[in-house]
Every structure is written in C-alpha cells, then in structure tokens.
Amino acid sequence: MSALEIGDNAPDFTLPTDGEGEISLSSLKGQKVVLYFYPKDDTPGCTKESCAFNDNLSALNKLNAQVIGASKCSVAKHDKFKAKYGLTFPLVSDENSNMCESYGVWKEKNMYGKKYMGIERSTFLIDEDGKIEQIWRKVKVDGHVDAVIEALK
Image (cartoon, rainbow, N blue to C red):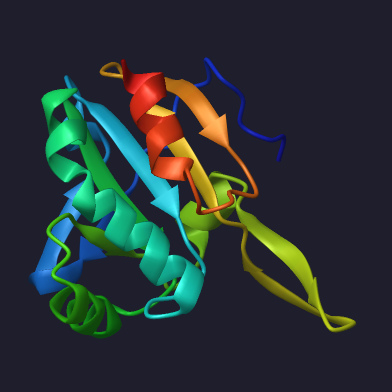
C-alpha cells in the first residue's frame, strides 16, 4: 500500500475507546481531527506527548479540532493511562493494527540491533471533509503540539 499523502482521504475507522466508548472518523465530519499515533501508554515519550496535547486542549478545541490518540494498547490500559494523567480526550485501541497499517505507521523498528514491528510516532491533521491536511512522521515530542496548533491556524 502506498503511503498516505496530503490531500488524500483519511482512512475511516471505527474503534473502541477508553471508557467503553467507540469512535469513528466519519462521525467527526465538520470538524478538524488531530489523530496522533504513539507506541505505548505510560512510557516517557508517549506520556509527555499525551500530556502536551491535554495541556493544550482548550487551544486546540478553539480551533475546531478534536484530538484523538491511537495505539495498540487495550482499552483497559487506556483507562488506566487516562486516569493516571487526567487525559480528557479519547484514546482509541487498535489492537489488531488495522488502523495503524491503513495510516502507514506500523513499521519495522530497530533498537539495539534487534528488529521488531511497532508504531512510528506520527500525527495526521484531517480537515472537516475527511481529507489529510498535514502529516508529521517520526515525531519528536518537544515542540510538536505547538507545530500542530500553528498548522491549525
């Protein structure tokens, strides 16, 4: 499958969220969506990124943007992660990797010479019509939320 590009339709999804909810991209038409993929709940980089989005949620909401975090962690793990850090936006659980694969973030990674499959930290800004407006791949956490807010303006 070729990589998604700016201007492409964002792949729709319907996935379980924390709190026994469910969310689909198509249900959010009419507002912008900041969809960020992160490797794992309650790890240093992922916690820092999630808390940065949460700390800036009112600014993002004022720009008509819904934030959604996505990882392969279970709904139960998401519930614990949200409670521990007071996160107030939905976290979707993509345990079978279908959404990660459709967005092209399920990649071979290499740590200390060991190869494994994992989520490449990435963010997609999706416009009100479901088209991809901006893509950040291999995200560095520091300053990332500021870059997303700037792109929304």
